[in-house]
Image (cartoon, rainbow, N blue to C red):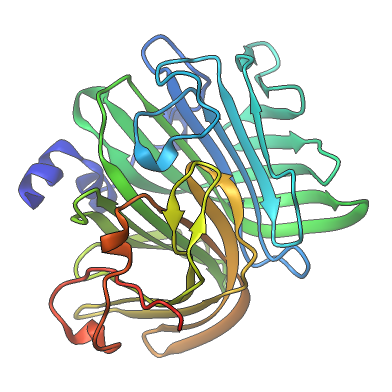
Length: 359
């Protein structure tokens, strides 16, 4: 199974070799070849009350459970824009839906999504602007050469990449202005129209470290709870170095919040306390996170939020309050409610994420 995945998905090989330079990376709106597009900007480790900032743009509908929206009129409609922009502070309007098509103005290199989200520029500099009564932003995004290839399917079926970026500008939350100067990640994904693909579980955690470094944790599972991908990306801006770890990367959820029903009508348990862990001959990474409980719905079929954390990276130890998390669980409840007899599960051979319901 893993050999087939590695053959069909070339991202592992691309992360182990010098990746293509920025000018070769795609960044565009929908085309006839690629009717589904994702553009995202994610910034962790901001000061309170923000803690994090995200802007998530989905153009068109992908035939994946984790990205299926309740507002979708048709699985193949291209004139659908799904927008999410949120921070840790209280919000009710973080998600917007529009039936207009995104536009691209070649002369000004301007992408316009709906009436209030604009992206200007090209690599390596972009300007992201979004206006909303609750949360607005105007950020210059300077992308680096540190590119993580998350997915690259053969025959050009789909690709998903993330690039470490420096974000500078202003965020306005309910009239309060916050100056931003922080590392973030700029992401782009595109996909052809393809049949149903049962990706049912997705979890991502991002945090910035000292000395201009960033850690990104990600796990994806299918509807049968089999791991599709479980990785950690370590990006060092000063050393201009990128590392990807995908062997024995464990994700555990130790406590959850009470069961919720999403606007999509799905039952889901959101993580309260969780842990990521990996160890090989030269690297040991352990992240212990505690959710702030500030989950916002609108990221596909799931949520985004923030967490406090303790991190061990070999001999280094760091703590923080602004970790950023994304969590979508469309698996059947029997997988979500599977009881874990021993919390010391990192010593076990498998890496199945299991939840303990609060009594």
